[in-house]
Image (cartoon, rainbow, N blue to C red; front, side):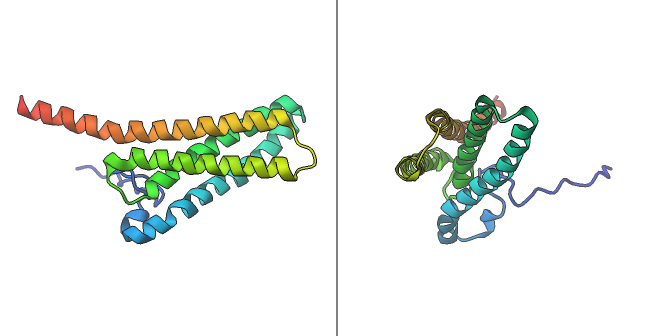
Length: 170
């Protein structure tokens, strides 16, 4: 008899159908309404926590431009990757259509990235072109990693179920 307590998943865990656990209890229209707010909240949380960490690390390593560019690029990669994953995990579509939703989230992310960069260039009196280029490239890279992650996770279950069916037939 196994007496170990069962691990309880967080409401922000993603189940085998690539859905957030909190979102499975909601109706489809509500989930569609929450797709972008949940993705933006995920980005905001990473930005808030990552900015504090970057300030701490820049203080430890000095205010060198290379360190700041590297740390901000890593933060942008993680932020936009999480944007894709959070948006897809909130959508109320079947597992095989999650990749299509990831591609749609990629387009939305590219629009957000382009608009924010255009706003920065138009409004800022001066900005660091190296930082702008590095973070833009890393944002796009983060979105691509997010789409690949969704593809691998949603494909993984399909391949496993096909393999199991083949072993049952033998």
